[in-house]
Amino acid sequence: MVILENVTTSTHQTKQQKYKLLLQQIRDIVSHEDDLIANFGNIAAVVHHTMGFDWTGFYLIKNGELVLGPFQGPAAVSRIPLGKGVCGTSYAKECTIIVDDVEQFAGYVPCSELDKSEISLPAFHKGEVALIFNINSHKMKNFDDTDKRYLEELMHLLEEIL
Ligand code: SME
Image (cartoon, rainbow, N blue to C red; front, side, top):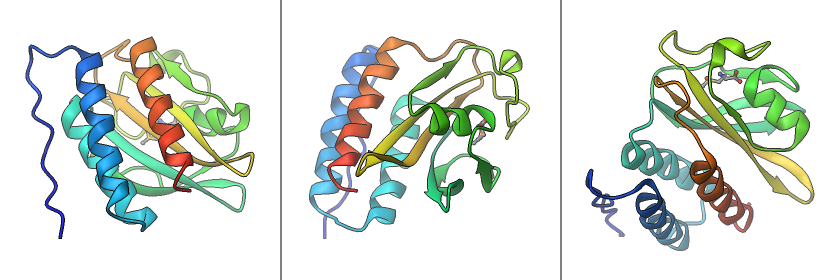
């Protein structure tokens, strides 16, 4: 049995350093387990707790709509149609979306009234979006190009195991 160690991060580490350690830990997680749901659960947990996010989780594409998968944080909406909200738009446009202020995003689907900013990223299987990884923050403008760069690297890592 593999015992998962939490990545040791400190306030002295930059966001970039934390993401680098996180990606190493996630490579280790997926190299020891081939069950997707087990891996998604642990990935949501380590990203959420290492980076200090307020909601971190997966929406899986099922029959053309987003269905809630493993996550960390408060209960969230179970299903999101294609094109709806930040996640459904990331699915429809097949790209990463960063929202600095959720109140300015038309059609935003709220999960917590405390959420202020978010990022949604697609991962692909056989040329189609297979899942959306969504992260919310209670801080405005919490996500930048560094988050986009490393979380897109995480999506590529996931694409290797989908
Ligand atoms: N805010 C998202 C919905 C998912 S939750 O925030 C977890 C959206 O607009 O798609």
